[in-house]
Length: 242
View 1: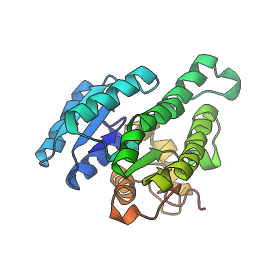
View 2: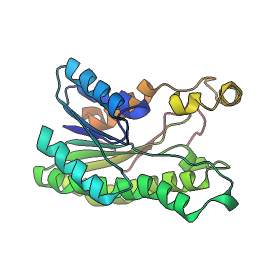
View 3: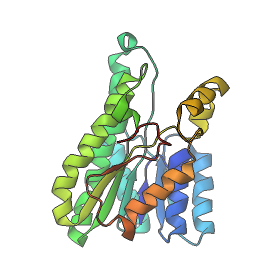
View 4: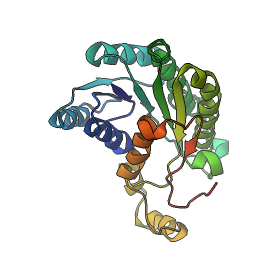
């Protein structure tokens, strides 16, 4: 069974469908997105797999643990966790409030940390599992106006590497994906001028598609990912090369 946090839209939705097409039952959580979540579960079941959805705030540790327990009760033990849930608040550095800072860090880092912990013990007991954390290329290069987001995404990469050291010897492979500019509802909302600027800068001259990120998730979740440990794969169209 695969768990995808923030799975009702965008990258999370594409990954959930890809996991179902690869033969996995899929559980997703969302934040106040019931209609899209139900549609996603229908897409999973249409592919012959079981689906489960639940509203859960990934910034709330109690909600994180409740979702993990409910997902495993509904679909069985978690073999693959895709920590995808996130949010972004744009503001100049000097205007970022403590509340805004806490919200971004809680969802990205605290939620990811305790979601991984909730399934980790079971993975170890069963002799293996995959934890995939969605970061961003902005955690590697930074950007103005989203300092907290960039800091949180960089923290995800550090968390991934540290946990990989502990988890690898116990059969659990922990890796990260750091996507570049991807076409989603959020990026479409940035407008045509922003898109043109980004596409002119990218060597591939286009935004990525959510299915291209899902392909990376499938690699890390499947047999082809068996020798990745603490890696950060970055499908980013050449936005950052490392």
